Amino acid sequence: MIKAAVLGSPIAHSLSPKIHRRAYEFLGIAGSYDAIEVGEDELANFFESERSLEWSGFSLTMPLKEAVIKLNCEVSQIAKLCNSGNTLYRRESQWSVTSTDYLAFRNLVNLKGGEKVAVIGGGGTARAAIGALNEKVATVDVFLRNPKRQSALVAAAPDLQLKFLEMSTQLSGYDLIIQTTPAGAIDELLVTELEVTGKLLECLYMPWPTKFAERYLDAQLEVISGGQLLVEQAMFQVELFAHVKVDFEAMRPLLLAEITE
Image (tube, rainbow, N blue to C red; front, side, top):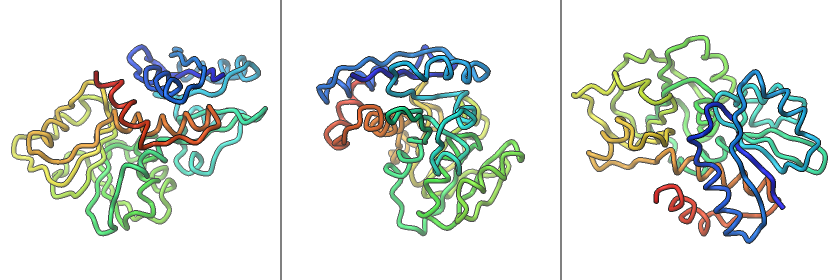
């Protein structure tokens, strides 16, 4: 039986319980999946008090994706490079941290190698996205408010050439934009004359659609939603928590329907 939960703060809005419970139902596996309010300063104590209990794993959302790297457990090479993890899972008595965000970005972003790509933001989700782009393109423009985040972004993708731009830089002409900042953070950039091109991967799923996504949808351009990203990374978590191989093609539409009804 699976016993899992999503941790974060705030957590009441999370769609992860609906996704995971539907996945267990699809697989015919008994399991529970809850949402637990845990702040950044509380994570270490929570984990130490719970690690010996019968948990299968934890999903982690903001603000825990960096804090989880510091826990007393094995950290995957992916999570180390990104300095970000969103998945704590148990293998027998050993706890491990990895980033299924990274794996989801690799699945969702299909590139030929010569595209012009931009990433907006510099947090843990941005680093997972850039890490996933490491072998897909040669260069990425990064729109960033805080220059202190530059070194961590470079470390996440050692083979990528990153060009750092201020948020006020003109945001147009890209084949792919990956938007990782919180709701409303880039609304001032979406000026009327902005000509959207290519496709958008908008990591937010609430509220939906975002103002940025609306621009692409109105122009009838491709949008990969935060809901799609959430489902994709969750399927990797289900594999880790349940120790089974998941048929992504069969499960994906069921989980997407669960969160869009």
